Image (cartoon, chains in turn blue, cyan):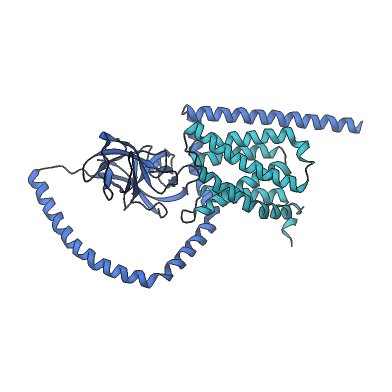
Length: 273
Length: 163
């Protein structure tokens, strides 16, 4: 009698497990379907992920981040004296450039007034700090603490003091996810500053460089040429620094991004005025 | 007072899962190797749980972590979720055979399963969303998985002894 009861209970448990597993499998398929069809539920789940789970994971992983930062600082202290000397020489060199830049700015302002031209300036929507970064496992992306409440929506350009960082791909109320330009799925229309040729660049598989995905009129750049955003895609305003060409091959070229993606602290979400 | 008096091993594994999940999705940009290490340990841990602690709660755990990894690492839903659910179905149908395996065979099976599911995740992410399958990246993860697997397996067997 007892063994019969046990067997019934085991069978019931197994049936329930099978049923539960089937339900979850169906849910998985539905989620994938919703994701592909850009359904409301998939976006809602993504918003919950960005708003709630991101800060929690940041807190949990904080000790490792702190330890690695301390290690890095200690390492920097070792080379402090040598770097100080280099910086002193750099300051002297930059002072000369600064004088020249001030002079040019004044001249530029006067010429603009004479030509009655309007400036192509960008509008800063929000300056935000990076709260999460995923690197090289699949997608190169960051999460920033600015969202719909700060007028940060999808498909806006993100920059920092060095140049173009990426574009927003998901925005929730408080946070947004930014796809970095060194990701292999990103694509940025760029212009070569020296010959004004146009091309599209994306990230390489290792996320260290940018590679040309399309070159207009097959005009290859030269090593050392500077790439800026062309403004052809509506997302990125024109003339933002993207990278510098370091290798030219038969069909494509490699560029190194200006932005140091290993040290992203603060970024700015912008749009064209 | 021993920790074991407050926490049983299943709870400890779940705490470890949360920690490794957080470390996997919060990359350390200056040390990319750490990301690979956390990613492979997370996979090893979740498979270990599936084999040694097979219970109903695990269905939810697998589902949520699959969803989480997909969202944070790919910004899409699919590869991790599909592979995790498939692994659960396989565990569900082979549960009684897995229980009879010896320790060494079990260890090898864990390692092979881990590398296989990472491979499948990469392949599915390429098929579904066009993520480039970089063989070097995969080999890097596989090598780290092999190096780390035995120490991790040893530590887990110690945790198992906690009541």
